[in-house]
Length: 122
Image: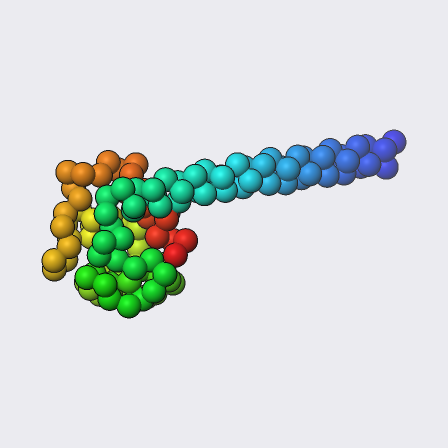
């Protein structure tokens, strides 16, 4: 009797673990397209807002502003020297450092999120 109860308990625990793993896996898969969609929208915004007029995306070389290739892998933002974080990129867009124009009145919070997702892909 005791062994049967133990087998049922073990089977139930295994079932819960497998279900949990499947749910977490599904959540991870569903999050990936969302980020890809955000990056795709960010790329379109980068083009539409004219960011490419001043910044290279495929180089670290300076055009008018610094090249953005590999930005997310750098320790600091090129001009301000602040750490590369989503919040610091957001601040740079809203209250720029040096000659960059402000996008505070030209980008929504959602659009900034998309741009940040795009910059992470460079």
